Image (cartoon, rainbow, N blue to C red; front, side, top):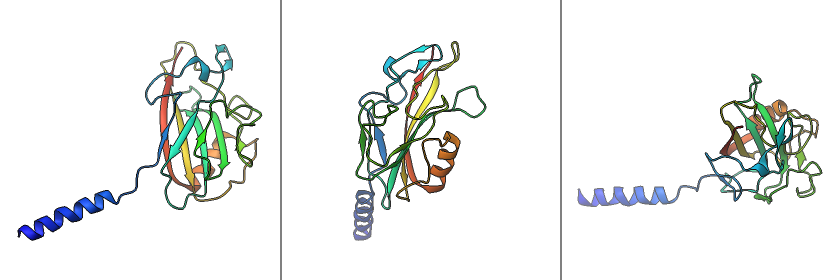
Length: 183
């Protein structure tokens, strides 16, 4: 009986130790559950921010990952369908970090082949937070997607809804960091 119990405990320990580490996102610029800084706030629509995408990094993508994508989405925007602040697709698996400012409209800090879709501000690139004055603080979901395809057939005019559809159809996993902002 003691030998069986010992064997069971050892087997459980080995199986727990063999589990893969969880796919995760982190940032030196933003923190989960905390407000965005003025640097990540939009410049325009009555907002006076730096409109700069934060540094993001991720690790432990699942086996079979062939590319990554990043989205920034505000589910609290009073539109009936949220607000897309950034869509970025076709990041190679060799990319596991983006520096602050990588979401600039010119995309010069992005790897070759990466495509920024159109935000709900009407242009490609990162569009910072700018909720209506007086609204409760909005949530800004920074999500890294691990995809089962090398490339998505999208261009810079792709809407957030189309990008979201393609990501959900091709996702192996995703990891999200949610920051807040209100004014």
